[in-house]
Amino acid sequence: MNRPPRPSRGFTLIELIAVMLVMSILGATAISALGSFDRAREAAAARALWRDIEYARERSLATGRRHWVVFNLAANSYSLLEEPSGAPSRGLAAPLTDVAAQGPLVRRLGIEEAAGVSVSSADFGGTSEVGFDWLGRPLSGAASPLVSDGSATLSAGSVVTVSAGNGMVSLDTP
Image (cartoon, rainbow, N blue to C red; front, side):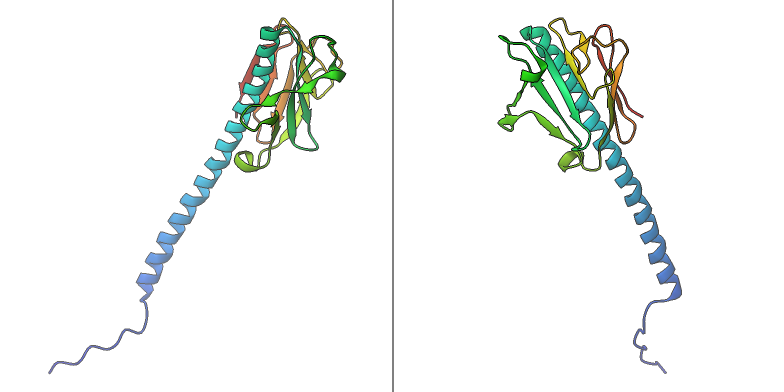
């Protein structure tokens, strides 16, 4: 005699354990992927900072005018400035134009593609700004030549360094 099949009343213990195992593997994979995403954001922000400081130095060499990278740690940002040719003075320096944004060249960290990234320190001869003269030599915020290397450090440990003597810009990522 054939009995009619009983209706299913739920999942077996084996099925529940299998689902929990698969979910834990997926969760661990997602968490490690998020960590690498944060590292990628930090690396991209560090490369952008290195590129912007190098750009200021190259513009000084090309135009014969002093250019500045000024960090605002409280606002988690930095700006690129250019001194006028007729009356060179750090106080008269005006922001460079960001061609893409059609406005002042100001980089804000901690938002959009740099979310979670911040400038933790900037020290260039005791100031939070670095300039370059017409020969590409680095200057402190007081417009005096840097006597020791200066650097800007991002939150996860990436460091952009400006060499005191020649103004060469280097990037060190963890």
